[in-house]
Length: 158
Image (cartoon, rainbow, N blue to C red; front, side, top):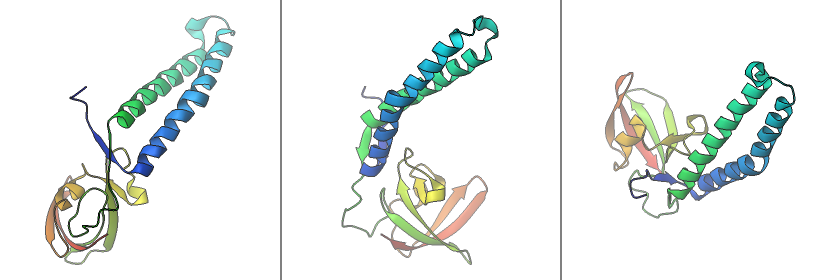
């Protein structure tokens, strides 16, 4: 479909999604089907908690499979090795400091499918990434966050 959302991601991020999809289709789906089969043998399905739980798991697995297939189908691979490291863009790692006296922080800007702030990977849809994209080293950038406005200075781009 022409109107489907695109998902920018690294090649490694796409591979991770493909691995998860493979696991869900080949292992997890079979486990859930087996749980449903066993739960049916317990008798009356109207009061069967095991059956209800297995059906909920099945719905989650099938929903996740559908989501992953869409994300993989609409993946746009980020070229992390592009030589222009003068401008903040998808795939770059940005080191910055909160002005006037914050701590130094570094994040890699990735698509929402790969975002994991605890691993130093923030979504290009996040307020801080949106504010930094297109900026250069040395620039001060105002960031509108849910907690209010803050100012950061870009120290390096790799």
